Image 1: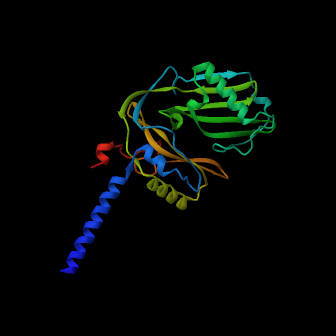
Image 2: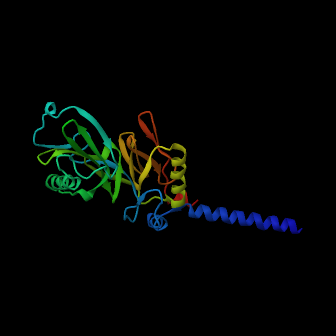
Image 3: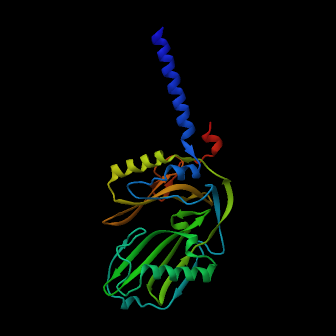
Length: 279
């Protein structure tokens, strides 16, 4: 009788723990920020100061991937640039802060900020830096900066919403500004996996792949092509630096699962709202 009673107590304890784990499995972005406040010993954790993480579809604005706003300042003769040597992505932090011609990374960002203000009435803070690249030629270097358009304060990753600028000298730069706007909000806010879930998923990936040193882990969006629509899906974007340059890996912000590139597209898990998460 005592054994049966003990088994019953143990079973009830397990059920209560399972219920508690289920309730705690999903959190708001505010709670997620609190959980990750102590940081991560393997790299920088970036969680934007957003109150909600909505899921929405996009529509092309006056400029888009098909018809981007492009600006070229100055002229550049490729035949005079010397032999191309190499080009390396360095993530957010490049190997050095100035090109051989003296053009600093900060100056390059200032040029970009000024052009954004002049062309679209925005600034560099309206976009999130994803990686920097230094292209090396036999007699010169080039800054290439790659940004993602922000929606609700979260950077979007992927080519669909990317801003790029090629800055070779003070008097030569080439800028491409795709522009998208929110079309329809599918979920006003979605449940996110708790920080321990994300941390475990990323560390499991790192231990099995050995493909670089973590630089940053950032909560943002990845564009999912959904028929004729483009959907912003919340993800954790892992930036890795290594001998071969910068590598990007994305994980679902709702489940922690890696979002794999299959053929010519990403394979996304199914999205869900709070009603589903609380069942």
